[in-house]
Image (cartoon, rainbow, N blue to C red; front, side, top):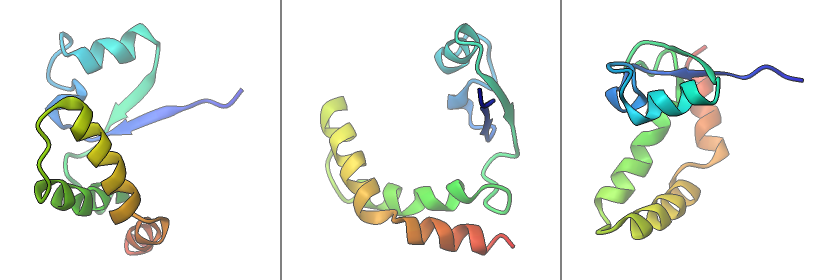
Length: 94
């Protein structure tokens, strides 16, 4: 089948700073292949700049528990980050 390799930045939440991190353990337990790229580098990863509209949208809405945060994140992603927006970010990298 196809081989999948996950690219991540060096955000501490991804587990790059500790093998005891829950995200790092999850990837290792499942044999997920991955590598770390530069942290917060929009010139290397279009997703970095694509998160900004979602973060801005979430900061304007209250989210007090995990369920409401997840629901609002999904709504914000669908509302604020269109495929056209992502394509624009990718094109700006050329």
